[in-house]
Amino acid sequence: MSDSLVPPLPPPVRTVGILGGGQLGRMMALAGARLGLKSVIYCPDVDSPAFDVAADHVCAPYDDEAALADFAARVDVVTYEFENVPAATAAFLDARVPVRPGTRSLAVSQDRLSEKTFLAELGVPTAPFRAVDSLADLESAIAEIGFPAVLKTRRFGYDGKGQVKITDPDDLAHAFEAMKGAPAILEGWVPFRREISVLTARGLDGRAVTFDVPENEHARHILKYSRVPADLKPETAARAVAVGEAVAAALDHVGVVAVELFLVETAQGERLVANEIAPRVHNSGHWTESACLVSQFEAHMRAVAGLPLGAPTRHSDVVMENLIGDEARDPERFLAEDGASLHLYGKAEIRPGRKMGHVNRIRPRADRG
Ligand code: AMP
Image (cartoon, rainbow, N blue to C red; front, side, top):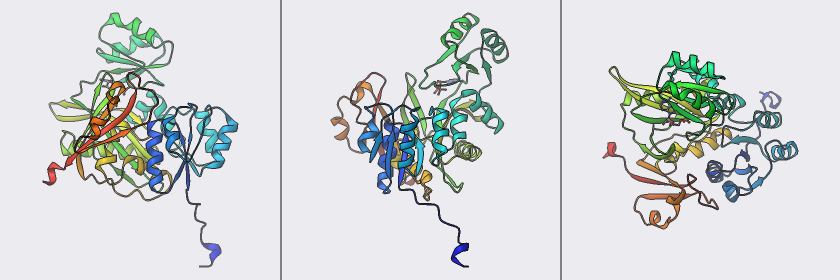
């Protein structure tokens, strides 16, 4: 074959642009650095923890087109650490440089209604749901779904913010007011036994790998612990993995995607009900840093850079503990602990409810004793 018939190779990715400068962006940049990838962080907050560990950063609002154009010119690919990247920002960048995961992953996961509709169309069970734009919508939705139920804003909700549980008819008006006029969704209450999540990394070539499934415990709506292995049947874990890989494929996702699932005990056995999709690395995957050969952060950076994903092999059992607010005040005690690996995010100020760091506690796999 003559040289002219050889298709040109895409230029290798050397620099990754990351939208968002929090702890997730920071850990992505650190993982990328291990592979020789430079990161440029884009974030409007001057105190962004990711700025400290990246090759460069741009500190500007997400609608500053001159700053976005400058950012795009400096990177080979753009990724993000949060799903609320404005659609116009993603589209502006996408016209200049590949954005991975793509804009579809953003569009589906930014809105709880499109997210649940997408899952339902994929055949993944969810809580029953109805769109709510008025008190009359809420009344007819509750008539169909019944009590208890939970009313959530369709967009910008996280860690239990923007949601109200409804247990009787007297709650309706108050719950609707709490949405402050924002489009909402009513969901049936899921009587779950535990919460789990599935983290799948999908490469540019469509190959996907999935980490072992963690079970997640929340305190005051914020993730507190992720434990692996999770206490669930192997066939349930296999179903969770199938959900992660089906979601990643249907989104044509490149990078890590997390699906939060409820585990429900029924007379017929364990059932999985999907709650939420995060088109990014996820807090419930922080244990992979210490217990896997390739962490979720490295898998994500490999995927967006078009590199082989490797295997997400887990070598240890692990419990990840989030350090929230004051819990990070005396980090030396974690450093003194055998089998514990401390990761601090370098945030300037401790605030109540703020994720300051995490500790991974590992021990040899019980199933390989
Ligand atoms: P979300 O913001 O949707 O991730 O919800 C935050 C937390 O609220 C979840 O992790 C659950 O603990 C709880 N929750 C949310 N939706 C439901 C539901 N439909 N049924 C039961 N619990 C829920």
